[in-house]
Image 1 (cartoon, rainbow, N blue to C red):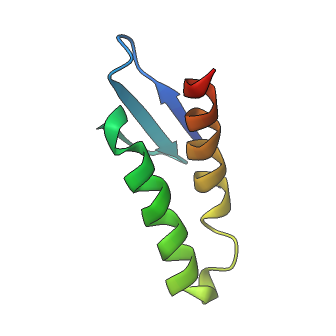
Image 2 (image 1 turned 135 degrees about the vertical axis):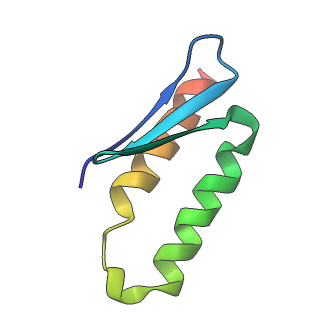
Length: 67
């Protein structure tokens, strides 16, 4: 399933979209969400790679914010 994380206007929030589901979070929570999805992937090995796209999208947003 495709995931994307996009910085919203004003730069204080980001929207995470996975398939048709989406939600908006404060940018200061970005590291917490990255850790959450890494933990889910580790805690639920049967999920295989279902969290990989979400983690990649969140980490790409984090990298973009550093530039």
